[in-house]
Amino acid sequence: MPVRTAQGGKLINNVRPSLDRMVRGRTGEQVAASFLSERGYRVLAKNQRTPLGELDLVCRTSSQFVIVEVKARSGDEYGSGLESIGPRKARRLRAAAMWWLSERGLLPCSLRFDAVVVALDGFGLPLSLEHVKDILGEGGG
Image (cartoon, rainbow, N blue to C red; front, side, top):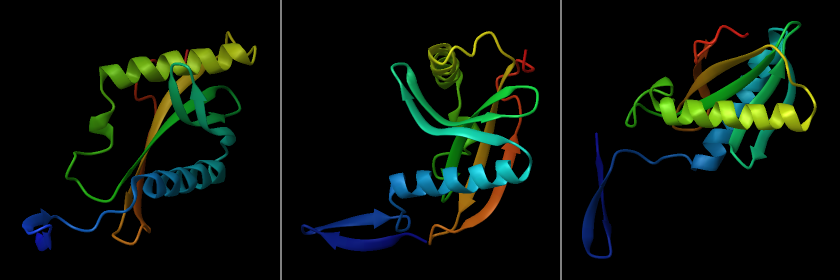
């Protein structure tokens, strides 16, 4: 139910108080990193900025590198986290991953792109987590 508040003499509809975007993102990344670590992934890096975009998590399994896009959501107002990974985002993820791996002399290598969607409650606590492997459909080759 929308909450109406007065601000500067005007009424504004607020769907609900939202978590600060940065805090929500960091919380989602911490939850995702813990989840993946518990399942045998080695988290090599977090929040890696490249000239071509940011990589949320860079992980390694026994057989391949895994670039993980983390989406933390406190509601469905803007669609699901997976819906936000369109063709433009896919191109940026690929390019940033290639740059990051190349800079470290890790190419060629087996590579896969995953997503972890973390649903948070109004207090920023995790409600659920969905791990989707191979979101770009490349099979890890």
